Length: 311
Image 1 (cartoon, rainbow, N blue to C red):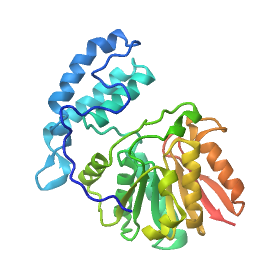
Image 2: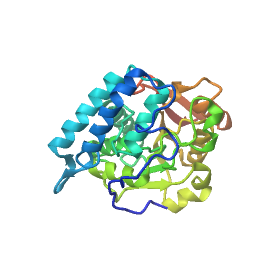
Image 3: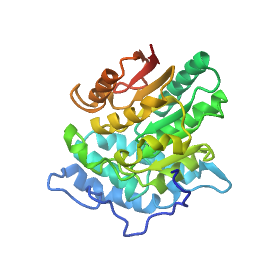
């Protein structure tokens, strides 16, 4: 069920996003600022993003060329400044265009804080359970940022037996995204070839890292864990935003939670208690009264980190 290795290649000139507005299109609500800056941004992207931003140095897959780093840095700095004046809809449209049209990575989580949190979680589990605490399961891979952070944390701690499994449709959020009120079907799309390219560039070891492509209602079957050889979950990352997707992920993980495991919710504060990850986790705990939840320090203000232990 692991995704086969496919060599990533830059998109063809006619590559376009599937449904969201791209930088080449002007919605009726466009601001004067965007009309002024759009031609410059588009030209910059076309001249730099197709090649240097995704090219690594020969023989050194973990390092980018100097032009690549400079271009990426300029783009991030410009984006932070201009982003203050853009609507949420416009930001999503630009981010989707950067990812799916121009192949520029967009990192959502604070990487240093997340990596440090992973290290603390793993050290806590090892102290309680030994050197083989289980596997890492992630639901909502997107561009692989969280999986890269976990991979680095495992390397720092010398935990080379822990495997990483990432589940994602790579086609964006499912049709049920409308039910939570703040998401849209197809949002957060990043094709699997590009995600694999970014993770390979970051030095991920594919001998123990696996991406499983498909919507959760199709791939999170009872037989999936046995097919993948997953017997125990150590750390679980829930970054699938939606109530239905989160509940499907938690139900899949339930048989894999033994004495203890740690669950990270990346969008805990994005919705109220009647939607999203909050509602799903509340219902999950009600179904499993034998599990006790204890809060740990989060890695950003919208996240929640919980240690689950069997009573």
